[in-house]
Image (cartoon, rainbow, N blue to C red):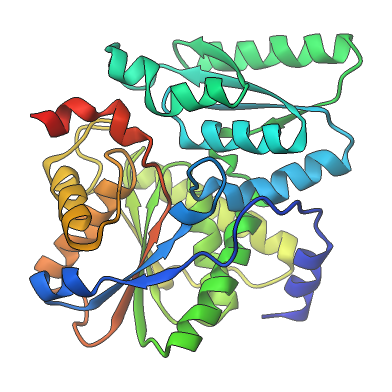
Length: 337
């Protein structure tokens, strides 16, 4: 790791919110059933903040910055069942900050499972103020309204972009990749591939850049679950470049990552058969829960890569488990069927 990057990371305001390091767990029973390469789960679903998830790493840097700036409240965005919103609400509760969540109806569902359980239930339990809007235009209007009202009353509010995916949030997964590199070395893995789901691309950007800095020498396979590959790829490129500039290091070699929207299916928040099968397979072989929106689709993509013979069976693969299990309750009917 370059000295400039190490110094920059160390100098950033950060508040510890998670339980680190998260486990790196082998999937031995899964391999017995499937064959193929040995799969390891980087268990960021065990990060410890309100059922865990990947956003905790980003929030450590984002809310560290908010506290350093003297902010007393946070406003952020997400879909109605946003994992980012739930973890932000939990972090704000822990730190004594007010939390306003602007949630859009990004998924065409209005049943009680989707609108009242899962992350929505937890958001309310964690004390967040929910503002449910129809689309992104209404979301930005609500943000302006809340921010101006806060300023008018003398408050200092901190805005977080969707998913916490800016060059500050990306640092969480640069740091996370350094943690992973230590675990890979300790376990003696011959790592060929890292697979991760991507929506707003901040997690994937941090892994791409962190893997390069840590010399992991692995191909990062990014599974799109929110937008087509053209959109996600462009956002990923932008975040990698911006964060590399902040760190004072070279941009990661574009040949070291790839982006696929094969897992996306009919769109964001719409389950796929492959994703559902992946959820059931990992649950029954390893006792690990995925979700229908993010990790289920991404793990289904990994299983497809194995089925197609695209991964070296003699080398190791890491799947970054970004959490999201509250979504299982919001999508209960698909499993009942």
